[in-house]
Length: 322
Image 1 (cartoon, rainbow, N blue to C red):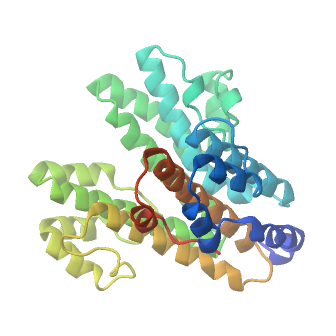
Image 2 (spheres, rainbow, N blue to C red; image 1 turned 180 degrees about the vertical axis):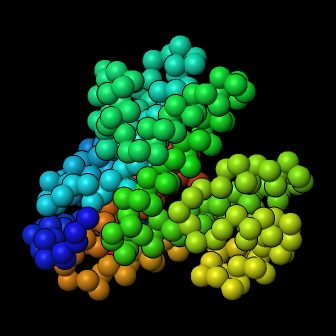
């Protein structure tokens, strides 16, 4: 794909104007200080959120609208496909698992993928294969075969996750920020899997499972991850000191904190786009920021629902793009 930053002059100008509506640190703190859910929903309405429905509905509808708006600004909407593929992957998992169970998948689909959710319910299998990127198209057949052989629904997840990351890496490759983000996302996901398996004391079975679930597209190869697993948690932390991820993991650090550190690493990587006047980085970073905003808002709204202390909620929330 030919990439010319000047093709994104219009999109960059429109998106820069939208950035002041992102829920950054200050706005999230203001929402956190409000006493009731009604006050929070009223404040969110001022930022373009529709307060009808449950927490997931509110966040998902806004994120869907954000993706549609940004796509309309782009000279080539395929730029953001690598961010849509994880949602396609989720939807494929839903379709396959509901097929096995004989249940209706409609309510479980997310309309954020490259294929509209309504189309997934009506297209034939051959048409779906044509709509999907190559690795997920092949992965769908492989996932079905793996489940038929084992009866294990986790095989569907393993196969489709790997396929999605292969397609993400291919779609992101022409764009430096997108490419760096996908590499880091794959690395961090693999490292978190490794850490979970170590803490489960999974032994040789964990080693085999790590190899089975390792996502492609990262910079840390299977040999590195295998050495980390064999060295135990202290070995993993020591090995990562020589990588960009050295500050994310620590001996005995709660897994939830490691996950937060990983998300914060990704948003700091994204923030590099703020120094760019125009180019593909601007819409890419905006959508990444919107996804982080959605995650933070789900945490905040859950806190208001169950009554967690504000300081606990603040600790769980991710860093913001703005």
